[in-house]
Amino acid sequence: MATSGLKADVERKRLLQRVCEEALRMAKPSEEEKRRTLRFSRDLTENLSEKLKSAGIEAEVEVQGSIAKDTWLAGEKDIDIFILLPKKYGREGFLKALEVAKNLAREGWREAYAEHPYIEAKIEGYTVDFVPCFKVKEASEAASSVDRTPLHTLYMKRRLSDPVRDEVRLLKRFMRGIGTYGAEIKVGGFSGYLCEVLILHYGSFLKVLEAASKWKKGELIDVENHYKGRREEAEKLFQGAPLIVVDPIDETRNLASSIGKTRLNEFIAASREFRKRPSLRFFYPGDVEPIPAGRLREVLERKGTSMVIVKFGPVEAVPDILWGQLYKSRRAIRGLIRRHGFRIIRDHVWSDEENLNVLLFELESLRLPAVKKHAGPPLEKAEDCERFLEKYLNSELAVSGPRVEGDRWVV
Figure 1: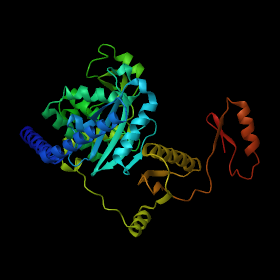
Figure 2 (figure 1 turned 180 degrees about the horizontal axis):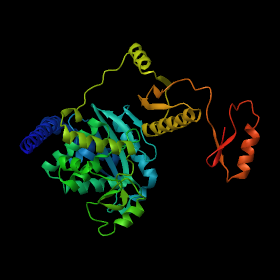
Figure 3 (figure 1 turned 180 degrees about the vertical axis):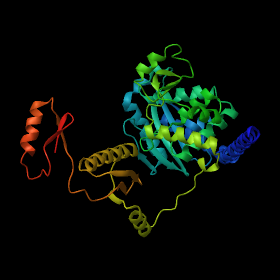
Figure 4 (figure 1 turned 30 degrees about the horizontal axis):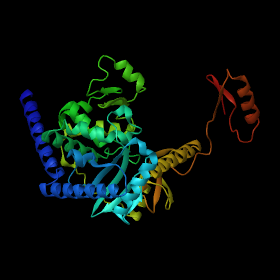
């Protein structure tokens, strides 16, 4: 038995290695793709620098994000161009710099921000974010999280070797495959920078998964040991967060603060499952075939459940605002449905971010029982009890009671 168990463990580790090698082969940009993307980025920054100079704006233009750190995934066409301005320009300087960027992008741009101003442009097949920020030397000087981004890039470029960059790619691709990658409101998952910090801390993709499989509430990850010997101080500052990943350049910031509970637990569960049953599907799950409308009706009838769909058209809002409103609407409708006694099996939000938005609620049934038990106030609240009795005593709505059960009235 011991021999067979050892053999199975060896085979599983070999399979893990093969799957990771194949996933990396697919996730890593080719040399040609790298050259093309870096050349485009360089030409764009040089062009924008010249136009800003001609406009009399003192600024430095730099590529940031995964392109700058060489941790981007094959096929990704997203480029972050930051315009670093002296603080003397103020917020007005951001708007002036963006006007120059708009002229460079011509017609293919849109304002895409909720708070910090930036534009998103489509240029030669790439999606380019032009982001103005203040140039700062330390995180303490940052006026916003955006100002910290160049410091994050500099920190990582000094620490990431080529092998470590590949480990980052594996983690990003894994998270994208299971749906936990992206810190935007739509996803509520792990940012690219957070993935990089996790790899720095644990050393490799598989070691991140091994550790995540055992994470407990309040897990503390502190690459720079800001809180060494001061764990209680960190826990107090971050107010019992389920996962605490201290920003290496800013000890007051938890990089995991925006991760939703479901996304965090999905990553933990997927980490456990992948280590037990390695498969390329965790990285590349493939497309899901939509169920035709007629077939959906059959499925619901067989399950005995019902679907409530709220559908509406365009909303004039940038994606972060839109998704925030959609999730808020879902919570409100979910509460309304439950308050009226219906039981929700699951719900979902979908949007194409342009013309169609959908809220879906699958209910156990669209019908409620004729009689429902209603709990009243506890007996220790005499005035509330009196109002309860005045409402239901001799009421035509009451089919039984009022009566006392335990420590409260019921009807």
